[in-house]
Image (cartoon, rainbow over all chains, first blue to last red; front, side):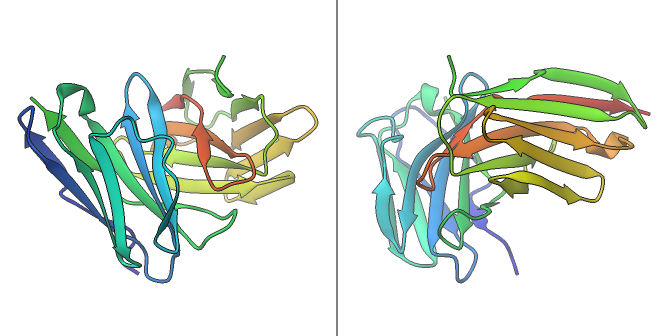
Length: 113
Length: 108
């Protein structure tokens, strides 16, 4: 199995630009999670989906952030407009539902100048 | 006060030493996870437990639900065990709340 796939691995952009991060979960997994990791705040859950439906988006920092899961094999996290404080590593993870182990992607390191 | 507290924040030891990392939490949980993050940044799930003890190779995880406390032990530590170890809890739903991590360095 290829594991959770994220793209791009690195993104450098300027303040005000739109950023789109992509995630392909492990085939057959029905839960998908977006996390953000920073030095100051550590790992935080942004949003998670079950069966392509957003369940909890209370961690999404503000309206500039949006996430979609149009089908079981693809999700996007979009930031528009981006700000320097959005610089972080964004992880996607997937699991086979319920209280089970989560499998993490390699992360996308975002730098907003 | 954070819902999940880990100690120590940093730990340096010599190869071969027995390592213990502690995690305390303040909420009722349905499961506790131990994760490992290597210097390259990738995150791997080590254990998920809701009671008792689990063992995988040289790693052992224990949890005491009444005391709201978990420990991760590494026997015969090796430099390749150097990583950040993260405790996370889920309280009913799948949402994870993370500790701040423990940075472990094993010197040869």
